[in-house]
Amino acid sequence: MRFPAGTALEMVMTKWGERPHWEFAATYLGADDHGEWLGFAPGAWFHRPGMEFHTTNTQVTLLPRDGWWVATFHGDDGPARHSWPHLGNAAVEVYVDMATPAVWDGSTVRSIDLDLDVIRGTTGVVHVDDEDEFAEHQVAFGYPADVVVAAQTACDDVRRWAEEWTAPFDGLTPRVWLDRVACP
Image (cartoon, rainbow, N blue to C red; front, top):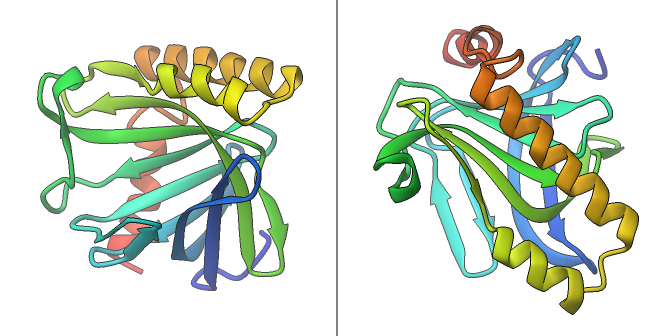
């Protein structure tokens, strides 16, 4: 474990080229074979330029050891923040950002969001979002070819795992961590 459970952390997500994106405080929960887990109780504040919100349910974020993604799992202890038309208007169960591997700087963790998202709703429907944005930003921001391949490969893998309910996307793995946020 990198920190004692309960340690306050900061997560800073940027877009390519140091463009600001989401920032939020988190609580370090621990680590397992899948990576390191951060927790968010209802009311946690997320903000980026032009948007901010407080969570309405318990959430945990998994930072995989070497993966090009960051996964957020939503608890069922309150109303979900979004319902998505692509998911049949279901609430979001898991939202995975394709992103550069997390880098730690003391109690701050940083990653670059690479646009592509895999979202699974509470009905089990899986959707890949922002493929158009990913294509546009490859040109506009000059993503290197190896970054494009890594993001697309991660997206394909995560989508398959989410569809097949493979751990950590099995519903059981994140439940252990969600319960730690709900009952510290």
